[in-house]
Length: 116
Length: 112
Image (tube, rainbow over all chains, first blue to last red; front, side, top):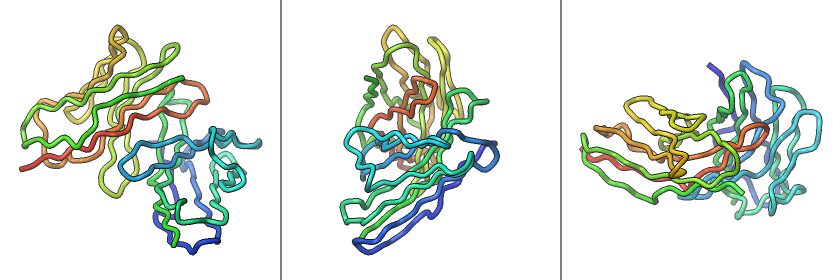
């Protein structure tokens, strides 16, 4: 079946540094990928829509300069958290819809980011 | 805009009990509806889905019926197991290139 792989699964970084998270569709092409953020005991909030070959679309309240998204190929989208701060600590999850399977979205395993 | 409301937990049940997790939604048009499950330390997995009114999604003993008249998609299981302990998310998709809209999640705890 379709698989979306996200890496790394856990990362700890120092304040002020940048962290890159990769999201790959393993056996299908994804022109669109989605990035979500999940706070403890809360729901997933859509951060941005990553579009292959064009700029990402950010949800209201999400800083595009802090959360850089690059969708360089049909199977890879990256989220870079720049100048990370402790309040950026969260669980980040990517997903990709597989068109052949209708509106179903496949999710990556998620990345637990801890900024110290 | 779209929104999903689901009952908040934690919900604690004994093994073999009957489970219902309520989910209602607000959406324009005809959304697709989903239940996702998140086991501890893992990402989300699709549990079941329904794409049109009166459809019933089912998987692993769980069921949910797309009720347009009540804008609901309640999750049910007749006899829960300890291994069903997880967080369950109700979600909808407007289709096309939209991301999913999620409910807040319901933490289910099944005790032996």
